[in-house]
Image (cartoon, rainbow, N blue to C red):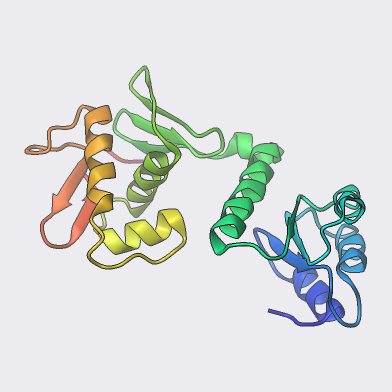
Length: 203
């Protein structure tokens, strides 16, 4: 984290970031100036934070290239939701996203850029969370994921170690995949640890 405008600008220009959270009120250079200079070098998604809630200030930031605007005070959940939204839009609007290689496991295929999941010729009706869980397991390529790591990966926040809600989502995924919990093909339970992708053909 950088505490002055010039420091933040240099860090944003030199680093490889998925998104930038930019406060309007900073010493040395305000957020609008930082945004103006940053847009000369980068199209990284920018979420602006400000104590000023006036519509004119929001419009100025958006017209200068901000992707979203969040007035103080805000909850951490709203901040994360808006960050996910701006980064998701950036992926969908990126021409290179069309070239992204699908995640494939046997006849199961996930396209993260379009959020489409197919099983053979059938499109799966997955919730955003179910899609994220399945993608995480497929990326792990057979490595076991604990419940806690799955929850952290898909929600970007920590849960109590006794939180068993992940089991409900896994059950729903199995149903949609036509997986038998006693003899699963796609999602295997590792008793006392968590879950992993089954030993199906992977690429």
